[in-house]
Image 1: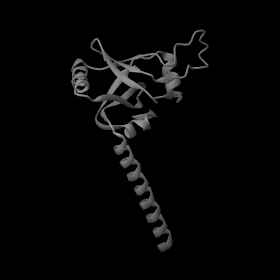
Image 2 (image 1 turned 135 degrees about the vertical axis):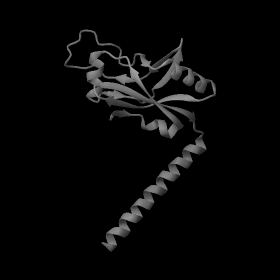
Image 3 (image 1 turned 90 degrees about the vertical axis):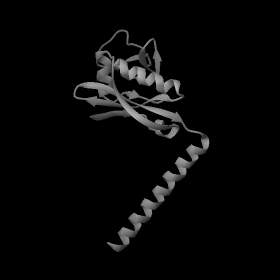
Image 4 (image 1 turned 180 degrees about the vertical axis):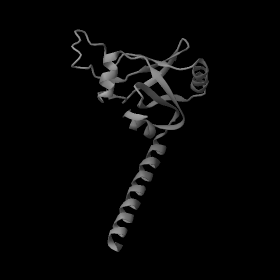
Length: 152
């Protein structure tokens, strides 16, 4: 599966656990726009209403060459295609205080799918720990590269 868009902020703001792939109900012009890379998952979230899952706040830029007179709302709600068992499981996780976080848009053959994860929000001190770990990993990598350049 090819990754079309990632929500990089999700792993920083949430402790992500189980991942799930869901289909999306999209129009043809939206699919073309997403395949062209004109999509943003920043600030997106999943809600469960009336036994259905909905993707909110995903910005899909209207496809220009389509010649549409009235382009649909770029941030409209989009229905997620999941099995009843999956929706029931997500509903149970949601009631347990977890969040449903969209992490990536994928291209599976000719279908656009959404990868979502069950996550728990991080506290400020957890975020600081993540930043510190990333910086130490980066410094370690630089030191290893410097050492290997000297000895090569």
